[in-house]
Length: 79
Image (cartoon, rainbow, N blue to C red; front, side, top):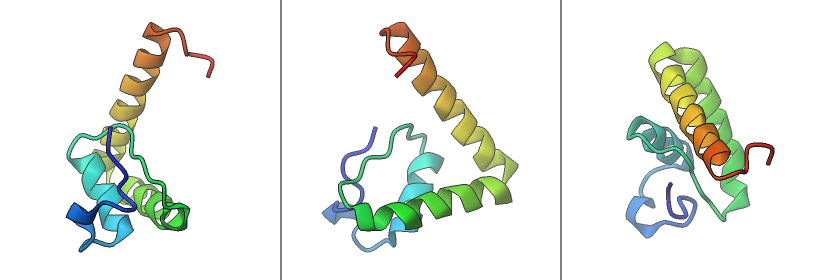
């Protein structure tokens, strides 16, 4: 899980789209941001990367699987 990638000083030099894609490439499962203005750019970059690369798509699917398994384990599968 990330900290706030929309406002993180450590990655401020990167465009929000790159922050999102690199986070998933590094194995991140849940990307958090408080900056709603960055959400469309982050979402669009993630979708584009998944369409462009079956490897990236596999990372996203594996991440979603881990999140859903954890939700099921702690009783939040329907949430």
